[in-house]
Amino acid sequence: MPVSAASMSFEIIPPIEHIETIASGKAVRTQARLRRRYGKGYWRKRKGIAMIKFDNGLWAKAELHWYEATGIGKKEFKIKRLLK
Image (cartoon, rainbow, N blue to C red; front, side, top):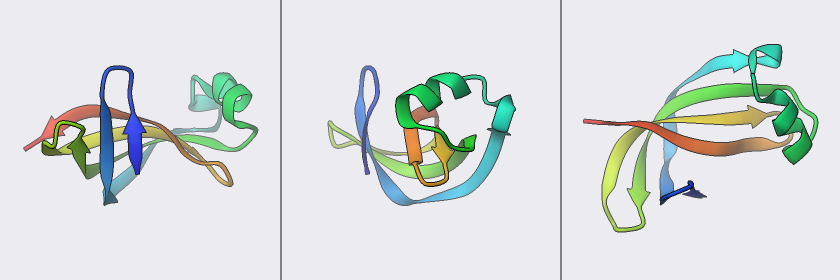
């Protein structure tokens, strides 16, 4: 699943493990923006750990954050930190 961030592109190598919900419903601060951009849904902010491959060929294990809604899917992946 290729993803492009502001300054880098990376590909997520499934599976994403240890998935947790950080915020849901009204606790998602960017909910209004997500609804305008992707549509109405029950938005959740989630985090998990996965292997990622950068465009330059390097691989790393990383903690990822993203937004997700039923029927819409996962949107706006962000690398929070690289893990050892």
